[in-house]
Structure formats: structure tokens, C-alpha cells
Length: 184
Image (cartoon, rainbow, N blue to C red; front, top):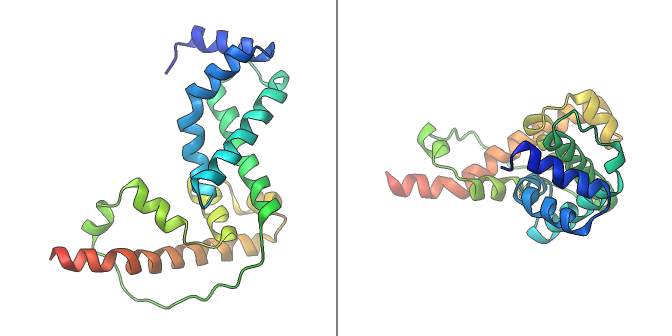
């Protein structure tokens, strides 16, 4: 990570719409922003689109950035909000059929999951469940905040989270049960 004085120099350059500094900021926070976007989208192409839209918002709204505060949380908030906007713009009504499962994975199987495995599982969720799961479990929002962001009832947020967890368990079984039993 850049030293504070270097980052401040880049941020002030962005405030003055200097392309060189905008490019430096983009490169510096690309991986961080992309890791957020990948949790909210189904493909890398969609994630790049959300990230690029986020950077446009960052550069357009730099006057609103408080230089007395950390940049990373401000940036994260913009990326999350842009991902939610993308979801709203592209959401479609989907019918989802759930399968019942009583399988409880062995703790070792869960410990061996990597980032790609987790993203694969999240990508199997319907959009509304994935967005709700990310906002609640990863970003730390309350159901009331999620409901307001997504224009849904608070009870819908709770139901979406419960269903997301249930579907994640089923997806885990579907993808990793065979691997687990093969290793025994």
C-alpha cells in the first residue's frame, strides 16, 4: 500500500482531474474494488463494468471526499452502492426451485475452500439472494438498511438471507460432496 503522503498526492491529483493520478489510483485500488465487485456479479466482465462505473463515480464526486478520513472505506461504499445500482438496473424476475438437503459437511471440507470455490457457490444464488447475502454477511448492513437500499420489505431481506444460506448449503453439497467422499 502507498504511504499516506503518496496516497494524498494521488488523491489531490484526482481532485484536480489529472488523468495521470486517476490512472495511478485506478491501478492502486483495482484488486480491492474487483474483489468487492466479483461478490455482486456473475462474471468478471460484469464485475469490471461495475468497477469502472464505480471509478467514474469516484472521480465525479471527489469534491465530496473528506481528506481527514480514510479513502478505502469511502471507495468501498461507492463500489457497493454501484453494485446495488447495477443489480437494480439488471434484475430480472427469476423462478428458483430449491432442493431439500440434510447433509452437513465435515468441518475439514469447509476449511479447504478457496476464494474461487466460494465465488462459484455465490454465483449459483439468484441475484436478490446473492446481493442480500453480501450486504448482510460480508458488508455488515442491517436488514433495515438492506430493505431500504433494495426497495424491499425488511421481512423480505430476512427471508432472502435465510434462503441464500440454505441454497449455499445445497450448492456446497452439490459441488463438493463428491470431492470430499473421494478423498476419504
